[in-house]
Length: 294
Image (cartoon, rainbow, N blue to C red):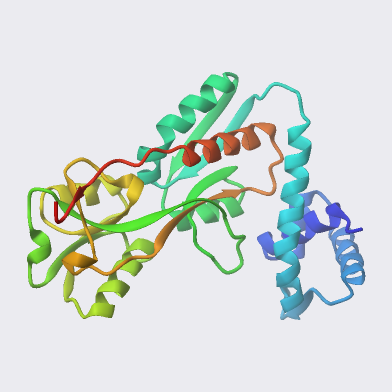
């Protein structure tokens, strides 16, 4: 049998980047952490760390083990929480991009508050890369993010998939301009990258007219008829029009929404919030949009 305490320490090392910082996180001495990792390597039968100067980095086998270790630790914490009959109370720190806050939080927080009146939710709105860092640094308990695979960080638990769509104003025809004006997120936004890649694939010339992390600002540029943007289906607003392949716009990849949890926190209130997030996203209604050719 694998030792869950050893696996928790192993995950801490991977998250913190060193044995020393991990020792502080799991409240053990550095020698105890080193002993745990030697025993874990013996149990696995393969080296999971290699020296890199003063630092230790994961071997290929260590990367493989990390995937399973995170799942095992999380499942252990979920199992304990499922049998905890104490009333859900306390503070849970939730992070989300601002566009998800507009679309998802009203229903999530309303349902969570009704079920858990003694719980307190602190909300931070920030771009996905910032939220992933905050979870890794234990500044957030839970984050709703656009699912991305970031090296050195855990993969998010994908809880919703929906199509990513080209959108324009229903009252204007800006998509017909020879050089397509765009309103998109900042440079490391996945949706922005998908938009540029798709346009390059068909040789469509474009220019970035507006750039912002704020979805309201991007949406305002679209509704004013100044630019075309890309949005997931659930983010469509009244006055927007969907542009499809018949209009000369290539198909985009699906948008994946995921949940990240801080492995350092084993709190019933956090698990209760995650349950409400998943339930709310599963039952989310999709707004009706105007088709370009309607």
